Amino acid sequence: MSQFTFKMPDLGEGTVDAEIVAWHTKPGDTVNEDQLIVEVMTDKAAVEVPAPVSGRVVSVTGAPGDKVAVGSPLIVFELSEGAKPPEAAAAPAASAAAPAVKTAAPTAAPAVKAAEPTPASVAKPAAPTSAPAAASAARQGRVMTSPANRRRASEAGIDLTTVAGSGPGGRIMRADLQTAAPPPPKAEAADTTEIKVIGLRRLIAERMSEAKRNIPHFAYVEEVDVTELESLRMHLNHSRSKDAGSLSYLPLVVMALTRVIESFPQCNVLYDAARGVLIRHRAVHVGIATQTPDGLKVPVVRNAQALGLWEVAAEIRRLAERARTNKATREELVGSTITVTSLGKLGGIASTPIINAPEVAIIGLNKAVERPVVYQGAIAVRRIMNLSSSFDHRFVDGYDAAAMIQALKERLEHPATIFIPTVKTP
Image 1 (cartoon, rainbow, N blue to C red):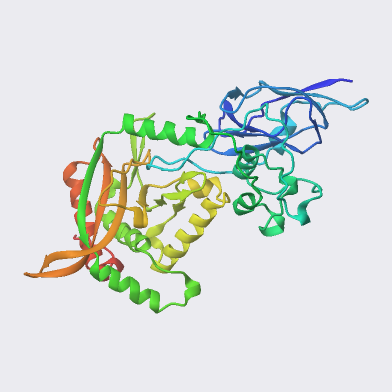
Image 2: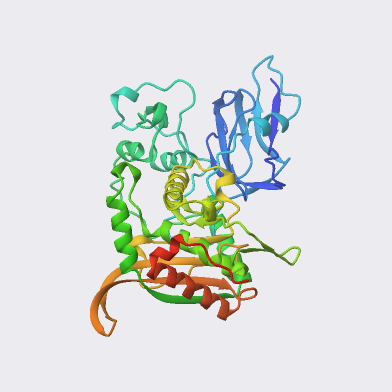
């Protein structure tokens, strides 16, 4: 029998190495060609790597969290008698490894619990006794599910071949794993748990640290009376069918921002640190910070200034859904020129959002609440929401940052002006 060494493939985009996220095989296992063997992550995307040959696994390189250089040995196979190894070690895998883009990790502050990694030495789990009868027999071919769900299944000791998927084409969803999860062990849990920071969580941590370390943030918070905006929102929702989706504040704020940014082009800028150049954009590509089960992602509403209100709302819903289900492409997750983040009902009174580098500004929506205020000389109950913003103080002066937020406030407090383009004086 002969051995074949499969090397870390070149995953493109100038990648020099990739991080091991999870092994789906171990030494001693027999795998078939095109069977998923390992999930790796570059700075751009998560990639599921299939086996280039059929054979028995002799050894693997690296544990979850380790980085392996492109062209370095990744896994060694023992081929069957008479089988011939591929002519090149890396070329077949590079074309076979289909990217499954999870995220381009943003630097707006995420708040999700990192999952424990799957050790490379974990033995193949036994089928849980609670598996549905329809899935008791092993599935033929590859199980359809996301890399994140594969990791969750490994951590929970669930054999995916025994789980009935409720998604399209039998795809296993997160809810299916919760149904199939075995009961927790009765043994007393340890006082502490070590969680290795890998994959998406590592990428978010690195980019947040880099943004906070390199960008001098200037924070500005302003109170906005959104009573009239709320009235308009409710009217528009009642005028549309329920199938059209409920209109939130977010698309209205995005629309207002595209009008305001015309007068503050210095805030619609990307900073190329390597060349020391500011790249000012005419088009407004708005990043929408979106919380997902795998972490915070920022899908991009492109050319938002050219879209109508319902088009913006529909695009935000479409992109958010694709981000949450790991279907967003890399093109949908990069290229924003300014970001808007909202925690909805968890928005609190104020926040200090971290700039999504290489942008120079981010706008945060806080919780809208009714409270008594002085309005037109009398005490009245009005709906109030704070806008929290951060700016790169190297390129946006405090006066300009405040003036932009005040202009945005004026549009939101007089929502009819959201639909009127800025009139430039000659």
